[in-house]
Length: 301
Image (cartoon, rainbow, N blue to C red; front, side, top):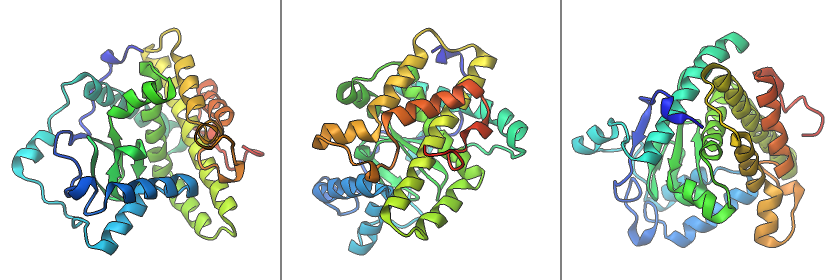
């Protein structure tokens, strides 16, 4: 992918090197929580489909360890946060985010009649604070609708290669575009409606199914971005789509569960199977239309 030609986004908040967790990590934890507690909460979030940041944030409040919502940042740190990244992974993330902004600001109004208000991407190392609670590298990238920001520890790209055997710049771009897809959902009012339906769900299985549809829609929206970006900028290179397919396959719920416990439990899926994630990305990529991403009307998934 010829990402070097993309405009670098101004909406990047670089918190890397700030020492770990936005509120201090006594004993390796966040806001007073031990690393063991954080790992347990991350596992609970993965199984239940609840954003681990929300669970950790709630635990911090109960233990009195969380920082106030109005985070105090010294002037030097604040100034550095406003500086564009100069390292390769930071420049890459800023370039992909910039391209998603340029694409969505055109296609969202044209396809939905809604204006696109860009998200902010927070780059961090180890841990930091988010509007949804503490962000930890173990959570992987995520979008927080409370502060409308994407949180990314750039070491996740290396983890994709080492842990999942997935590499390639377009595989990494797919991950960022997926999180931007959640922001698009938020801009369209979809996330709030789904949350209400989940709260009214009669079972955990029903809530999980709603979560799967949200995630598959974000995969599809990532495909919509890829199609429209390539049509305008001709940035894709041979093998790029295969990289995205490899990434979608590697992080499917069925594959992750089989790797961790030897078998898959479809009723506990929160993101979709490998085949589903691949299919919905390609649905968006082939059509280039947001209307093709309505996973809630699709029969099955």
